[in-house]
Length: 203
Image (tube, rainbow, N blue to C red; front, side, top):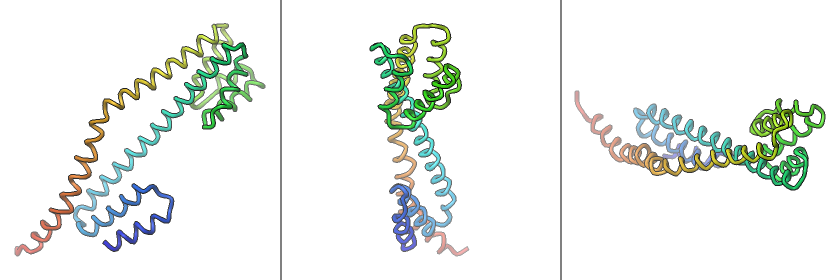
């Protein structure tokens, strides 16, 4: 117990999230009290860490798509007002403070030199938007309609993801209860008594 408390106190001096500090302290506590179950807890901790990392990456990608949708939607407002596509995208990119706005501004700077070729060389979250712009500029297709349709598709995808996440919420709420809280409670209450009983057996 003292080792877990000391480790938790040391980790609080770092910038680790609170859940990481608690998880490490619990792992040390369980490893010292029930050493036979330490590998199982290590595997479970690695699985939870991987799951949280996957969720964090998915959240970053979802936020980037939402910013691209906002960028396309604001660009349609500029196009409707009579601005050119580069001016509309420039004004829209300046309203975004995240990485999507920075990516869009880099592509727009390259467009001033390379023209539509910069649109097809765009990478990252803004690639689909600028490739749509580049195709419209080369083929003469209605630019406003293409950008509006892309914004609508992005918004529809995000709405579908939110609906799917809402449907999965009850199952996700059962995960910590069934796989973490109840097993941890049983290990903390039953496992020490079982280990003591096995230790007193005379074989």
